[in-house]
Image 1 (tube, each protein chain N blue to C red):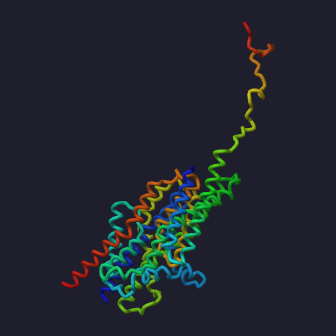
Image 2: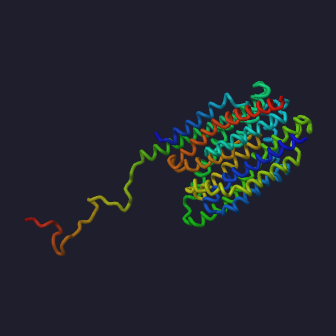
Amino acid sequence: MDRRVLFFVGAAAACVLLVPVAPDEFRKVCWIVAIVYLVMAAASGLDSYSRNHAVRRPHPSFKTDAQREPVSTSSGGSGGPASG
Amino acid sequence: MFGIVAVVLIALAFDYTNGFHDAANSIATVVSTRVLSPRLAVAWAAFFNFAAFALGKIAVLRIVFGTHVASTIAKDVVLQDTLTIGVVFAGLVGAIGWNLITFYLGLPTSSSHALVGGIAGAAVARSGSHVLESEGLRKIGVFIVLSPLIGLALALLLTIGIMWLFHKVKRVQALNRGFRRGQLVSAAAFSLGHGANDAQKTMGVILAVLIASHHLPKGSDVPLWVVLAAHTAIGLGTLTGGWRIVKTMGSRITKLQPVGGMAAESAAAGALFFASASGIPVSTTHTITGAIVGVGAARRLSAVRWGVASRVVVAWVLTIPGAFVIAAVASLLIRMIARM
């Protein structure tokens, strides 16, 4: 798992642990910060997943062997290697 | 009367050293990105440290730049009845002593938390643990953890937002110029936040002394001369000493680009404004450290210097108990000397 996800989940957990200790007027601040970190953890997780599972499309300039035109090695010849 | 004047002067000296040290936080990013020279940056920060005082006089802005933090220090750490001149003096000795020890050890500590720990330690040594105001201490304790986390989250979201907005812009040099100008604004905002939060801790101490010595009735607001003196002390501290430390701080975070510096300062300023409006004394050092970590984490976690971050965490854990113990010993010594 992405380390960033673990870090954000840890930060969210720390905020949740502060809720019972916090004075009443600041409890919602702890919840809000915890939710923000959870959202960032989810976004980071999705980002990490999409990077790891992305379909690797070749660059448009890349050509497979079949697409390449045969390269002539000698002028006027068949282009194939000379057989003995 | 001599005792009161001495404690007020020590409190202002504490404020001066606070400005001296924390100037590095407010302008390190501007210097490291070469937006301003160290001298100019220090003058810029000192001006906005002091400007927080003027903004506190404007009715609309009083909610952020008022004296809520000063009231918390004076009224919400320990019972007001226990705050004698001796207790405040011992508390300041504890805070300054802890700052000197950690300065020698190279630990990045918070003057604010040292002050809270010092006052609490001195009062407990004199009158017992029942004098502690649990509601106020819980508020301060919760924000020791929350303020860097808020700074980090804001900086990270701001960095990602800026990247989204400008990722298609091809004129990189023009964009960088824009961010460099933006950094001037964000550094000014952070210095305003620093002035609004840190100068008020000294105001709180002086207010406590004036109430303890019956020069002011209980529940009084901070007098104008105290506000002016505290902002002058922190501004002068920033102006005279900061640039020496800035060179070190600036070189530690050279990997910050103007965009990152702007995001970190804006996020930290936002966190400081929120804390000041809520009357919570927070550490500017921890807040800007959290914000810089947030900017680094927007790229990847390995971009963050975790060694520095872990030293800050160690300082978090140790500061209040450390200053508490020194102030308690100082308080006991003062009582012994007074009885002799």
